[in-house]
Image (cartoon, rainbow, N blue to C red; front, top):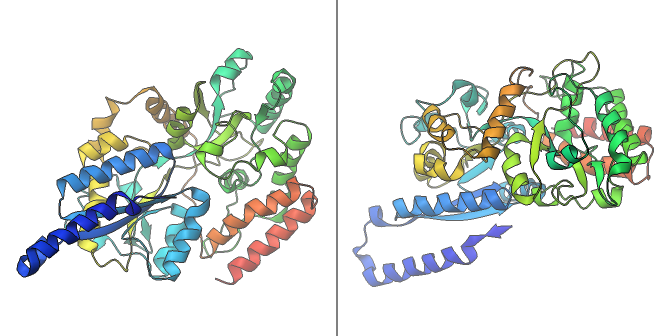
Length: 429
């Protein structure tokens, strides 16, 4: 975590306090400083961009002090849950599509509709992206950009090996395995073909959607069968046994942050990411990184979909919701702010911002837009909203898979144990 309140803002708040002491009772409420808390999950590049936007906002709004908090994805949701339980959620919250329904239906997020035209300027915002932030017809989050799941690969390395990946829309798991087996023995020691993603829920979601199913049904039950998970884990376990993936003790070094991903640490040629994360991955690699779609199952349906990379929400408990709405609006619609953010969080839903950025994007950012243009030709609809406790199911997937990867349970035993636990978890909601 990087909590800058302990350094920069402590000094600023101390200075503000000193000013108040000097001015005594002469300061009016309108002149008083508003303190907002902003929380996000990120990576070093996103943290830098976000902190620059925070500084820009404070420069333009001298009466507002922002206390930033940021965590890695793996720690973020536990931290947020703890803050929610303690009634101390930050004013502005970076939210994920899979969690927004839980937080909104628990009454922990503020409805944003009353602020549209009154702090939030969404006149130029894409209606489909706006819909992705609605829960039960009310707006609780605003998309910070569109993205989709992706395979990220070391293009430099594959070019050296003479490997060109097949058509991104039509290639299959058989293609993936054939390429992996072909290059496995040509790779240097400790470099493996593909990171092991048996614990990756978004990849598994694509797997079940290709089978015409879903993670969750509209009424909040599991939308897939035990055999779907068993076959998914059997695929990854066999790749591990065949030496196509790192051994489990190496894979465990990936602690769900961009910096520890196997491709970023030089342990794999192929890995998983969301399209907007290519910017951060590329910054960690000397070799050129590129994107392609996840492979298909024979005769399967399109599994991927376009989703909001993340959303900005406001806490229902915020004592400064008007100011929080202005900060959200700044991130979404301010030209200077978006010159800094660019498309690291996905392609903006604001048409004027998108038009402004496209002409000035670098090679990596342009590659993301090119990728999404390909994905748009073969996607399914946005899935049903995850039910309450879906986040707990997601968090349980990694230890469930690792019990299999480390040989503590067979594939069949591990899949059954996770499946039954997931059903019980949802039944408690």
